[in-house]
Image (cartoon, rainbow, N blue to C red; front, side, top):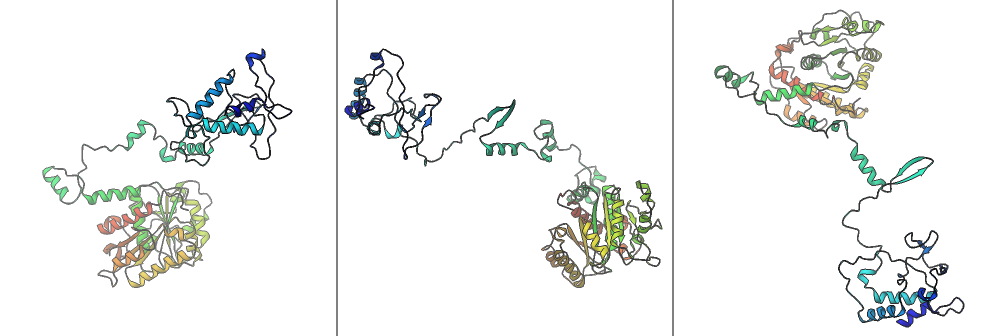
Length: 492
């Protein structure tokens, strides 16, 4: 082994034989001439610069073993070699750092390099001094990303990150939505803390109300009253822009106009803002007859006025009922020169949408009429009214299929089906089964069954206070289902 090591220091530049090593102590000079490394062969790896040990242009070979310490004698190296032969696998002392990348030093010739590699394999244990395998298992603990490097060019500082994926993840976590703005503050977190009120709201109906009047024992609101308050909260949601809702049915006499007046009255009473219902029936509707006629003006008169600059200008053409629902009538059929057209709906909504939060359209019975097609192209919600009969159920099913096949699939998700009992008594169809069939095509909870009401059947002006309690509750549920779409971004 010592002979192999000596061959390294005895090789000369001319004959290729190993020469005697130069001892710095014997040479008397502190600087030795640099050794020029041989040119890399076609199969050897390219040299790597080691900034710690080599100069600015000194190539370093990472595959070569470390150089012996400067000033060490040949006897010390030979004693270390003999000790390595006696103990081929020494134990690594505790606390000794593991060598990650050995510092390379140039070798004179390939033969000497092979001798040193054989000596290094015999001297160093394979588990401690071998180079790390490239196919080793990944680290169990994630390594934190290094700091970004800065490049100073032309007086400007450009921060370049070497971990773009980690920076993108951190940037995405740093962006907050509108609902999360202010959530990091302690004062804003208090708004999500449930507070138990000390005083209960007394019940206004039922046996709880009677008990409170007689004994002053307050048991709070009943579950039915709590449900009603929840419906009103949903109805009071803020609508984006001017929300438009269309009410239509393929067959006449199903109570479409009555549903429009009742729905608009509930929305106006609960919300308290401006709500307008427009008679968009091209065959001459009777919307003002069911809501209360106060003005003889019509939608044609509104479109003819070019000086509409404020809400009071439009209010002169509308009628208002006891629930503050405003109605814009269509031209009377006996004096009308033409039917309600698509441009009439577009012109009216372009004016009234600036002053009304909700606009309802009482459409006709045909889906192919240009006015109805114009309404369907602008509304954000739809109410399909059908009678509680087999014929009425077929007309409602045809309407759903027509909407799906004519490019109104998105409107079906915001539609409601109303099954109206227009005659007293039990119908000739299973209403529960009919509701289940319709809920297969529209979202659950959007099929409303209206009972027969004597006030509606009279055909006079509809007053919300004269309607049956069950009828009012069903209309409130219809208004709440439509109001759930007020805050949707993907609506029209």
